[in-house]
Length: 125
Image (cartoon, rainbow, N blue to C red; front, side):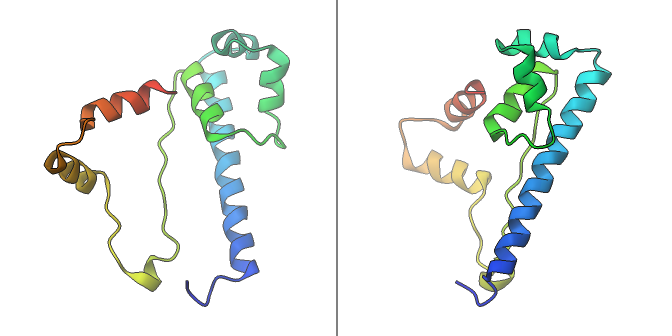
């Protein structure tokens, strides 16, 4: 743990997370409209009511990432996410990425292959 983990730093990170969530939602609404889809259309695709979509699109909504991904699929888009290590400058260690995991998995002869894992993950949306 570093010395810069203060309540102010945590608050700044939470504000950044919320800002990202609002940006995702705004961009998805723009795409819905650009693709000529109504809230009713999206509701039908998701198997929910139009008021549920209206509530989701409100600025004060707090949808999960899974909900945003489902909404994205319904408006013919997708969301790419990234994890940003705010403490990398303090520890400087390499955290294995997908390529490292792929190599380790191939060597360890696990039950699941990388392609099966990708299919399972992508199919869970």
